[in-house]
Length: 334
Image 1: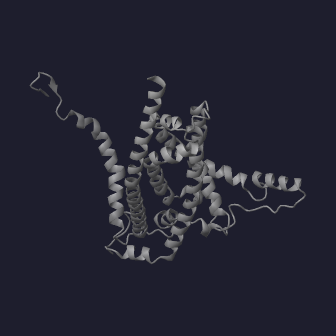
Image 2: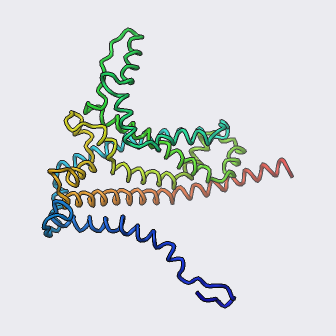
Image 3: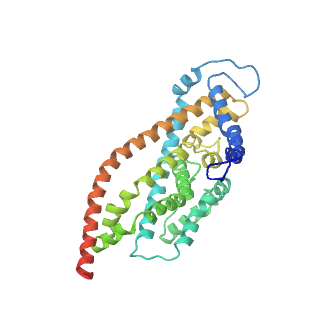
């Protein structure tokens, strides 16, 4: 440790010692597994670290692309995620509109944030147990409430097996997943709204713009970066969906094939006794990674193209709003 020309102590590379623990842990538990999985994807390994393995190169990847069960599982995953993202973002958007509108002047925003975010803090196992109990087709509270409503109108109600029917299981899991995650999206969107300069809203109010005009012309365009973040993170999490479908489905049930996701298929070959094929499971993992990467890049490309057009519109609208604000102050204060 020496001194620089100003006589102050120079710490040289001391900072590296502070980040070294993190780097070591990151390499052991993140980098090494990723590289080892890549290695296994080119081998015929049955169980990692057990037995003799040999190189099969791209045979596992060829098998993935010709495996109809993989594509069926991928379709189930996309279908569940599609319903989930529509409900999740729709509810988050609705709450963002209500809580960001200065005309409503809702107090206690912090309390509402906590309430809406709480489902995201509950463990998936607890959520699965809770909704399995509520949605039980014979004794579940949900069916009993609907039956009571039907009886008020003198009609009969046939209990629905929400998790056991292939027609309803996927949608049910998607709704539960959206309930868990809409609070997170709401927090992200509200953070984006609070990052928008108040000058835009004040100028719009002076110009006489309505709440929907303000939201469509100011709030929504300026929320695009945050929307992109929410969409990509939701895509990454949605295509890796495992916990709720795995915990809330019965392998012997009729609905199992309709909620069988890609990661459940990977789990079958990676960890299930009797069907363990580590090499094939590793190839599935990397194919899923490439699919997520490709869709994310497409989202970024589409966003960037639209952003250029939106930036030009925002510049024009911003100039118009600033002029209106300046004219207002000139008329009333000068």
